[in-house]
Length: 513
Ligand code: GLU
Image (cartoon, rainbow, N blue to C red; front, side):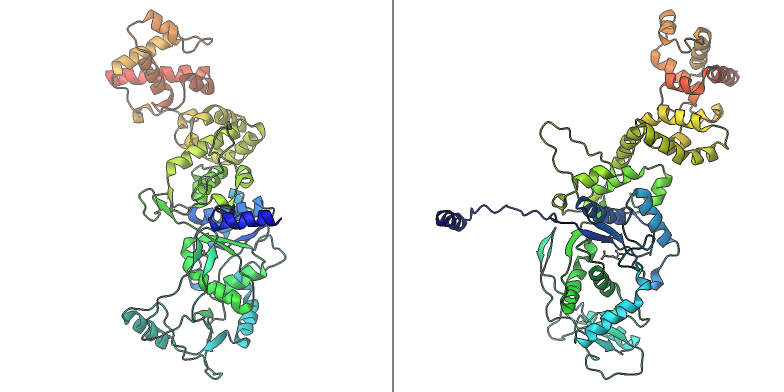
């Protein structure tokens, strides 16, 4: 035994003790995580990714995923944002185990309904000397802020602690947290140890005594967040990097209460490919509007997961694929594979994922049926109920493998359910040639062999295969590409096919005259 200990010590001295280079940050036991949006806007890609990572961590460790609505900033509430958040999460399959909708043992899960809880905990801090009532007027506080900014160097902490020992007054008051001299350094699982201190001016000492309860009795984000994460037994907080700077404040409050803080993981910002903040045009659209554009939920979660996380390398000989369902993501998720750099959003990838997931839905009978059921109402609307569900299913099965979304069938390949408006279609470059090819096809086709390309080329060696297909595409689909001619004929049916050839012949004859 001594021998091996000596060996260890020796190795240690040489700096070669076998300690894993980077320790795994994946929790050993079940993680309780939460997604805590403020209903100040619709759910977008960035917040979906935050929700997703929290969901994946909880599910991959056998824990729970909570949804908590942080609605204490009453001025910034957007009326239908709350409903949008619930709908978006349900649609993407990130169903919370506890939430304002489904309830749970640590509710209520809406902060506006927890007012008395915050008051109780704020009083506790006052009693313990970690908080005090502040009676300062708005004007005084504004003046303090302005003078703080005018200092050289300026300071980000502005309050002068006038009310720290103020006697109980009659006026309105807020509760302030008595901040420590220095905030303690903390460990973020992704970024490592961080020592973040506010900027102070040594000649004009002010304090970071932030408000924890506002005049309206509602808590500020910082305070409610800490109280709730503790009471809801959250073990891991995954949130955007923009909250990193606030974390020392949160930890100071945990210490004041004597509570153990959760583990923190701050994930990088999403940016456009050119490193700019996401804009509406570049990827930053609401989750539900992506649904309306025909994006499948599993494609969206697949897309969002890869901004700042990558799956473990597959075993040797196994294929690599970035295409993953939500279940795949759960089975592969490890915190260790999160990355630090900003994540760039490339919409092309979303369309690639959508195509792949659409294909796998189509090839599996029960998921195909579900897809048909879900999308038929939309199709019915577009076609005024003229077509059956069977036809829609047939269309999805045959056209689906060639499109990147269901919406594309309804918006681009409309010639399957609407007459072709030849006058509005892309005209073939040589009308005479197109006309004569169509006439040739018309003469050569039979119901057994509606598009006998090889026969036509044999008897008309001057024709090119490409021109033949182009002419047929003009007549059948108004020139829209993407679907093969045999598929077009198969879906339209023989009679409609012949009718369209005839219509195009008549149309071109009139054009040429
Ligand atoms: N309510 C905050 C937000 O809207 C939550 C931040 C956090 O997760 O602590 O992003």
